[in-house]
Image (cartoon, rainbow, N blue to C red):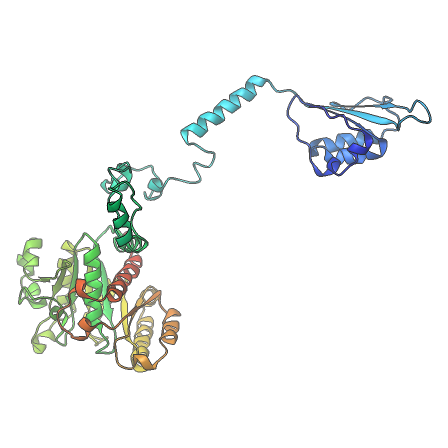
Length: 451
């Protein structure tokens, strides 16, 4: 390139504010007054400044060998009215064969068309990130999802869900598909959180508290229904309350069998069909195993019996919920906590209920279950008496300093009746709370048993 400028032009604001860039094989010519040689040096690329400074310090041009790639000549003024002397500086950079430039350009174009980039290794694809080893091991069948395999177009894109979006889709004769509404998308995102996949065996989640009457059994049923409604695998809730539990009364009974029958028939249970005959199933596909109705027999249900039931359930279910009794020092509690992957602590909204729930956490920490406490979820049942008299935010603030998550369970007329629960007939806010509780519980469970 070539730049011929007078002294006034060269010493203007553009002389130093616009840095020059050079390409191999290019030349730079500039005629400058002597006093602007510094401005020129400042405007040159950094790798050439040293050469210009060294050349400017020479007393007379041409008296010494010129630096490589840089020349300067001085023309003295011809008379009193002549223009000031100017310096001509010529800068030459090594030429690179244009074939090399063309080759580099072609290579860049090919990489752009193929979708490759210099950061490919640093940013793996979403499919590779889902694989444990970053994409080197064979893919599992679970990787063959509809989102990956189906091309999205007018024919394959499903009809939208949501009142307005569905109306637009119908009114335009299926020409305009706005997709699902924000509410539907939020529902699907919550489903994805609940549907977390597990490997390596059953996950055990006990629901416990030291205070009776705070809704522990109700929370167990809600959690189990939310899990079973969203997930495709099997979920079971076991009533391990030695004091005549009522978990089986939250669903329509389909059998009179109890945990005692499972222990007695354990040797003859050869498959899921045999086991399913001893449980009741509700509309969400949640299986419930009842406790003994006779309190004298229930007291006989001990640690060994619980382990028998848990071992059998581990053959056929992905998640086992345990509705524990209030006796925290009972032998069944010890067996339950030893198998637990996470725990749910149920607290009411009154002062004494919140205090007893916090004391439950303290007892767990003192007996070596500190990890369970830090990973615990507190279900705050706001349907208990006295809730409207206390500051629930302060209760939540207290538990937030001790556990991983807190979820409020609102009052619902169906839950207050203490009878059979129909998950679909619950108030929307109650279903959302149950699903949120299910999501945060699942997120705290290890995806792999080795984790």
